[in-house]
Amino acid sequence: MKEIKIKKNCFKISCIGAGYVGGPTMAVIADKCPHIQVYVLDLNKNRIKDWNSENPKDFPVFEPGLEEIILRTRGKNLFFTTDIEENISDSDMVFLSVNTPTKTSGIGSGRASDLRWIEKCARQVADASNGHTIVIEKSTLPVRTASTIKTILNSPSKKEDNKGKSFAVLSNPEFLAEGTAINDLENPDRVLIGGEDEKAIETLAGIYKNWVDDKKIIRTNLWSSELSKLTANAFLAQRITSINSVAAICEATGADVNEVSLAIGTDTRIGNKFLKSGPGFGGSCFKKDILNLVYLCRFFGLENISNYWESVVNLNSWNQNRITEIVVNKLFGTLAEKKIVLLGFAFKANTNDTRESSAITISKNLLIEGADLKIHDPQVSEKQISIELEKVLNNEVNTSFESEFSKFSFEKVDDIYDAFIDADAIIVVTEWEEYSKLDWEKISRLMRHPAWVFDTRSIVNKEEVLKTNINLWNIGIG
Ligand SMILES: NC(=O)c1ccc[n+]([C@@H]2O[C@H](COP(=O)([O-])OP(=O)(O)OC[C@H]3O[C@@H](n4cnc5c(N)ncnc54)[C@H](O)[C@@H]3O)[C@@H](O)[C@H]2O)c1
Image (cartoon, rainbow, N blue to C red; front, top):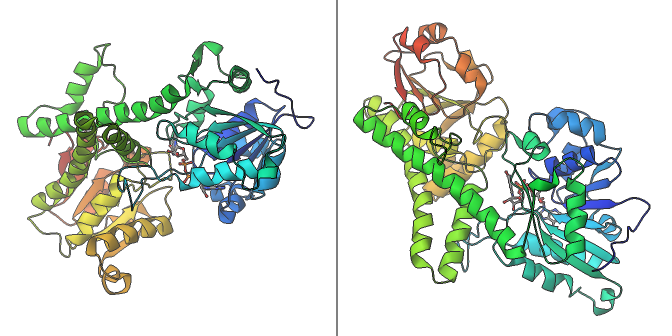
């Protein structure tokens, strides 16, 4: 076992990638370990500028509780910077927390992970590091990526740079859920560390032990750790898809999905979490991680298993699309010149993340049907909504932005009640708490009738809606 010698007078961690995982994860480590120096590195200058902003509203990631942690640690033992090489060079431990999206071209396009960012940062560490460095996969990666990372680390671009360098590679996937990231990081169900180098494993475990009980720290081999992250996300996504499929059966049969969830969730083998039906799962991870698993299965010749997991993604797309079909049917088969209010654009409540949000697919479909869309979200900016819709509509019309995109009518609204004036329908897409407290009497007076509310999250106050003359459609009930 190699002795881990601290390079400076204080243990130093760097994390490459200041995103939804790197930012909150490092903030919590810095908060729980004041004796450790934590540097969050990113090549995106704007992102780093925003993390360093005096105004917490500028922070690139919104998570309940994050702002307070950043404000008490930043500048003390937590630093956000674009000085990547110089900070890698004297770090004892480097986390790789960069994006690993699905490949969009070439071999494995649409399924395999695009590993260009992880490869690039492994090369940066190979070249810039000094002495012994523990390198940790924090990104979600295909099984056996650690082997690629080891190869790169042991081959710096100039051979003479190799002198005196050594590495231990660990897998330490992140299980936080956006919207509850800080609570998940502070009170994790488990911490998973995969690796072969015992000393490195215990050094990393030692950091977590500052606030996590050792019993919750699971040590495995590298490949089990990498595969566990993909599997966890595949199971979670499958569970959402299962309850969403039951929701559709409920709507067809007169059963109530909330009652079914309650009834099955009391079975301890099933458990009551993650049984809420909705407009389909979103977020940057579930789809890409299942597709990654699908790709791996095909690669290893496991065709039936690959098809099984792929069907989860296909059913989720179906679920996202069926919401629009219901809306169009209820609104007499056309949305032309109809004003529709979309409540929520983030993929779930308590985050500003819009990646793979069902709101994108629903908005796209409504706009193609000719609707005039007013979109409200307490945390997502107008710019972000525009970026997402521009991307998806341009793909759809497969033509130039100038000639086609301008045809679509949508805007972000800040005053929610203003948006309801003369609206034909309201669709609740994200489960922000404020949408459960709306004044339906007032809304009914503002809307054009016959008016509809489509609740894809089962959060509106049904009794209050039913007191008005607004029609209500509720997911999993009808
Ligand atoms: N978002 C989640 O909820 C979540 C949860 C668990 C795991 N993960 C995984 O964690 C990883 C990161 O996800 P994220 O949501 O934080 O991504 P993100 O896109 O928010 O952040 C990644 C950051 O890495 C930076 N980056 C990329 N290459 C770089 C390089 N060579 N040098 C410096 N910076 C570089 C990018 O500029 C970006 O700011 C992914 O593999 C993801 O699957 C995400």
